[in-house]
Image (tube, rainbow over all chains, first blue to last red):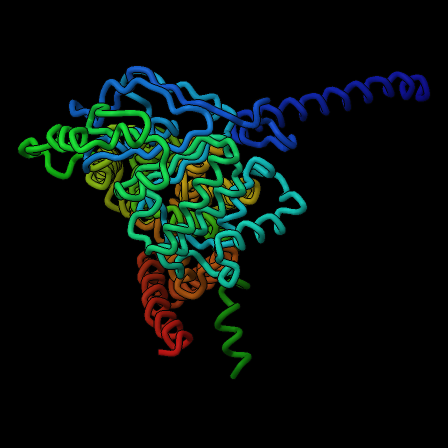
Amino acid sequence: MVSVLRTAAAPLRRSLAVSLLAIGGRAQSAFSRHFDSGYDPSPSNRVADGGKERIVVRNLSVCYDKRCAFENLTGEFAPASLTAVIGPNGAGKSSLLKALAGVIRPTSGEVVCSALARHRLAYLPQQDELDRDFPITVAELVALGDWRNFGSVREVPPGLATRVHEAVAAVGLLTIIDRPIAELSVGQFQRALFARLLLQDADVILLDEPFASLDESTTEDLLHFLQRWQGEGRTVVAVLHDFDRVRQYFPSTLLLAREPIAWGDTSLALTPENLTRAQKMLSPPEDGDIGRAA
Amino acid sequence: MIGQLIELLIGPFETFGFMRVALVACFALALANGPIGTLLLMRRESMDGNVLSHAVMPGAALGFLYWGYSLAALTLGGVFAGLAVASLTALMARSRPQLQNTSLIAFYLVSLSLGVMIVAARGSQADLMHVLFGTLLAVDLKALVLIACISSLTMLVVAALYRPLAIESFDPAFLRAVGGGGGAFRAIFVTLVVLNLAASFQAFGTLLAIGPMLLPAAAARCWTRKVWPTIALATFIGMAAAVARLLMSYYAKRPSGPAFATGAVVIYGVSLLAAGRTRLKLKGL
C-alpha cells in the first residue's frame, strides 16, 4: 500500500517541482520587465550600421501651464552628427533636451528615436540637478554607467573594475578615484560624469550645458570626447553658450529662441542676422514672467 | 557596586514581561528604521516622511472609531490613509512642483486635525493622548508579531532593492535612461515608509513616529558618510535610545514617548557638534 502511494507520489512531486520552477521563472521575467528592463548583458544590441542613430522631431512643443518653452520644432539630428543647441536664456534649450531624453513628455508633436527604447541614450543634466551630497565615490559613480550589465539586482560582472579604472584614467581622475563626489570640484565632477558616459556606451548622447563654469583646460579636454564620440558613430547633441567654441568644434547648430531660428551647418546657422532675430524673439521680456523660463 | 548597576539596568526587564515585549518591539523597529531613515535622508525626503507619519493618523483614528483598540483595524486604517496621502502628494508634486513643500504642510495639517477630530468624536482625552504619543508598554505579543513581520519585510526588500532605491534619488534621469523603473521604486519605498510608520505608531504615537525613523539616522550621518556604517550606527543608536527610554519610563514614571524624542534630538545635536569638530581636526584645521 505504502509503496503504491510512493510510486503515485513521485510524478506528482516531479510535476509540482516543474510548475514551481515555471512560476519562479515567470515571476523573474515579470520582475525584470517591470523593474529592470535596462538589463541586457548581450555583447552588443547595437543596430547593424555601427550604432548610427538619428533623432527625428515633428512639430515638437513643450509647454508649462500656458507658456511654451519652445514650439513647432521639426527636423532631424542626423546619424553620427555633432550638434550644438544655442539660444538666449529661456529659449527652451534644456526643455528640448529633456524632451529628447524622455525626461518630460512633449505637450504636442513627437520624438522618434529608437535609442531611447533600447536604453542606448545617455542624458547628462545640468550639474545643479544632481545631489552632490550623495554618499558615493568617483569609482562607484563611474561604475553606474555599466548599469545594463548588472541592472537593479544582479551581481556586478567581472572586469567592471578594470573598465572603470580605464574610464577614470581617460578623464584624468585616477589620483582621486576613491574620493566621495562631495569633495570634488565642479570640473572634476564633470570629468567623472564623462567617465560614466564612456562606460554607458550610448548611441545618442545629450549634454545640457556640459561646460558651464568649467575652466579652459577641462573644457578643452572634454570637447575632445565629444569629437571622439562623433567619430565613433554616435549622435551627440549639446547645449552651449560659447559661440566661438561652437564655430570651432560643432559641424551643425540649432539656434533656438522658443521656436527654431536656424538649423543646419554651423556656418549657415550662426549668422549675425539670425542671432539678432533670436535675441529679438525673447526681448523685451513679458512682464511678470521673469525667471520662469525653463 | 557594579552588580547593583547591572541590577538597575536589567532588573526591570527580568521582572516584567511587558517590559521585555516593549524592548523587543523597539529593537525590531530600530532594525527597520535604520535603513529606512538613512534612505529617507539620502533621498532628501525627511519632510515627506514627516507628513506621512501624520497621514497615518486619520486612518488609524477611523479604525479606532469603528473597532476600538483592534490592532488590525488601527494598522490597516493607518496604512491605507498613509498610502492615500502618499499618492495625493505625488500627484500634487507632478502638477505643481514649485508648491511641493507648501502642499506637504497642508496635508500634514489636514491629517492631524482630521485625526484629532475623529478620535475626539468618540474617544476620551486619554484615547487622544494614546494615539498621539503612543503606548509602548501596551504592546502585546500580537502587536509584537506584526511589528516583527513588517520589520523583517522591510529589511528583505531594502536588501534586495538597495541599489535602485539609492540611485533613484541621486540621478533619476540616469536611471530612467538606462532602464531602471524609477516610478516603481519610489512607490515601493513610500509603501515601506508607510508600513513602518504604521508599525511604529502604537509604540511612538503618530506625532512622534517619525522621530525614531529620522533622528538616529541623522545622528549617524554626522559620524560617517558611508552608507552601510550609517545604517548600522543608526540602528545601534535607535536601540540604545529605546533601552534608555524604557528604563526612564520605568524609574521616573513619566510618559516615555516625548522623553525618547527629546533624548534623540539631544543625541543628534551632540553628534552634529562633536562630529563637526572631529572632521575639522582631521582636515588639519
